[in-house]
Image (cartoon, rainbow, N blue to C red; front, side, top):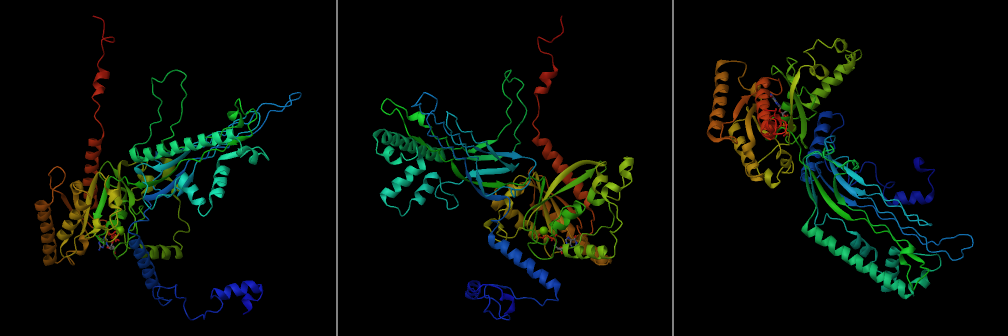
Length: 590
Ligand SMILES: Nc1nc2c(ncn2[C@@H]2O[C@H](COP(=O)(O)OP(=O)(O)OP(=O)(O)O)[C@@H](O)[C@H]2O)c(=O)[nH]1
Ligand SMILES: [Mg+2]
């Protein structure tokens, strides 16, 4: 075994004991390769198996790992320790106690920000900044800086209650755990060490004195009260914030002159611990030279569940493989990187894309004629081939195009920067994982992503027109939405019948007539059975996402729904009139 020849003997034994050296090379390890290994030359099969493994894994998680759902345990900063010191000065042999107090631990706040879109940047364990320790000559420790956890707009924050297994321990429970297995004396000693600071070599003397024991009793009494108040707060006012609105930074116009302009910190979720008391605090008639101080308190420990409700104007609802991701890619000109493949549950997390529309109804994705949005793997292959042929070698970057400096001509063949000049309206669409029968009971990818659709302004059903009975799909989709939340299906405004290119054969009359009849039947069904929020019938639009056909009509309709819904959301301002009409003081003299 020459490879391991240089390893020391102990390391070799360790490797043998782990069956690394003794294992036969042709015998696979029992824990590896749960799926059969495909032949190495079949790349397509390898890829398919990799994807299937990923989907299966995700399905087993039941949506637990969506990044719109996170549990964080938070600790406020711990307070700094108090100090035991005595004032020293020439000709003053017994100076007074002069230990400063510890600084307060920093509080932890939570603040919504429009600059984030996922919870992925948030750590699972967060600790506030600690306060500084007190020092001699009455110097108090510095207070810990507040810590702000920034979360995306649309995050719902909930405190996890006691008794839930996901909740981490609070300060007292954690201490109790660290004391397990100790006898009474050891417990007492450890608890004292956690709470008191003694002057060097005075520990034993201090604890034997009455005034120390009095002080200790008072400290435990305060602690019990704090613990009771905490429990009461947890029961009566558990933390709950629906962070829909950005926090307003503007200073009120009627703020008193000289008031400090503080930047908002957000909502307090865990307060820092109080700083310890320095030894002057324990000066009394009986004890003229207190040689102990208290340690800082621990910060509050809480566990929060953060849940992000994605804010998209339109939510796509459809069965797996209906073509939702293809449609989103077509509508955004391929900018939304939503994976497309011909197996169920390709999309595992919601993907949000932006649709940009010009004055005349053209949209960014629709300006390049003849664009085909194929499966991701095929597109990647084509891209690779183009790169191999050297087509990108002399391509200009976006900033190198001559029109940029001219600033006038809009190249209608290109999206991106060039569309900025034409764009007059934009809205967002969320492509969601496929919904199947009983999704609302957590079958398939479960219902965790349905949450993200709750706040969409409107929903669009996507059905596969080439399937034998697209109308049945609609009923299932509607029933699942209703089962998840009563009244949710009333948000649906449109049925997009995708894959219309597969109908009509090669253009022979019989096939075309059949396709028309199928579309009519779908329209009749929708008119009969589906109505929207205001009792209107849903629009039905046949399209082809893959070949970007008839998308302008669908975009136009979606645009009107979004506009209507936004108009309804904007609060009316009746006060405007009052402002314009001159009041008695301003009215013109008679
Ligand atoms: N012919 C044709 N095929 C399409 C069209 N739209 C999508 N497809 C194909 O249908 C298959 C599924 O498309 P996806 O976009 O992945 O479907 P999905 O609804 O996102 O599926 P899930 O993410 O699994 O829910 C792919 O093979 C697409 O190429 C279309 O308009 N015409
Ligand atoms: Mg998809």
